[in-house]
Image (cartoon, rainbow, N blue to C red):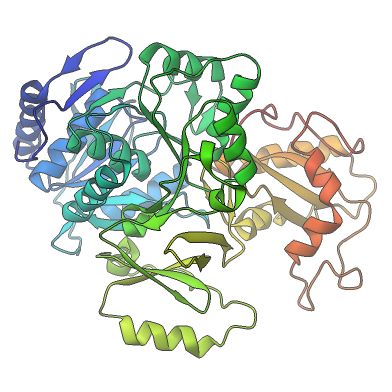
Length: 525
């Protein structure tokens, strides 16, 4: 193994206690590399929620610069097929048995089924440095592949080691390892710092798919492993805060909890600090290798104003604001669609923005590696960043999943049962909807059954779990629709503030609120 980790680095199975020191880790990585060489693997797809073997295979590919495509297990069949068609892998490792055209099962290695493509490998033009393709949640239903080099991933990890400054940390991975944030900040960074990475499968963490179904398992795992560092999305932070309020004692070992994936309310960070959780907010995106900025201010000693900041950019990055939008200079290789001929929607123009300002900035910097993040930001005088929200109408759940509301709304309206649908769920644990049905003969049970059918076609993070039935339609007259009949989302959110709030509590504003559509209200999208 060529990766340069300190002698104290190790991987540990959090449940069995099996621990691999650096020599053992190197030997196991080499074993995986030999397996890849035996199959002459060029493009490897890994379909697994993550465990010790996931990490070893990932490190084997990183070390040998073999293209790896980690895929979460909760994607819909259509999304998975899109990824397969785009990547054209010659080898798949999966935690479950698969039945895919053109692939034959060729063995099982360390509890991962191996499937090899039985035809001639299809050509795929990618940058020579592309070592990993990480897929976003698929804000428009189709996951978007981000191409990253090994050097970029390790640079981000090294900058995190410098920023966090904890020697040989004991880190417990809680997020799926296919999540780039956990992959880089939860595996590479602790190992580069000479630390120990604790791993477990999704059921041992209490997850079913992308949802946390058994919170007690997660809390018990944290208590039993006594980690020093964690990475949380806002929904998990909220769970830990509530658990503390109900008597759960966080381990005294905890030194650093990074929170990212979606905007975190300063008040929640303050509550977490009060409960004894050492939280630090961060910000990032896949195109920049995950983390862009990370706060160095402990929430326990920070003002609410300080807590609204995501900190300064990591040391290897440059940032600037273009018409209020945050741009980051980073060696981004491009999207998979750039090389497969697929197209992606262009970013929206800000209200009041001069379109040519953005176009001129792009033209001037098109060869200089600047990434337009799509996020509105404010840069403080000391260099810290405050993120002010998405430029587009993108919903980001409290678990960090990106959902384009127009995509789901189109699915809800496609059979004519409903005339209007507005998806809500930004910074919330699941998706809900405001619905209008013009036919009074259609009852709520019929609407519920239709939504259940639609949900079958959606990945779990985009499913509508509750709805509020509007008694009158949205209209241009009441200020909730534009002239071309598009929803004015901010006005709708304000007008129906109470009804939307009720969709995320156990209380109902009216009988029109359905709370048992697909899953209980505690389920996450």
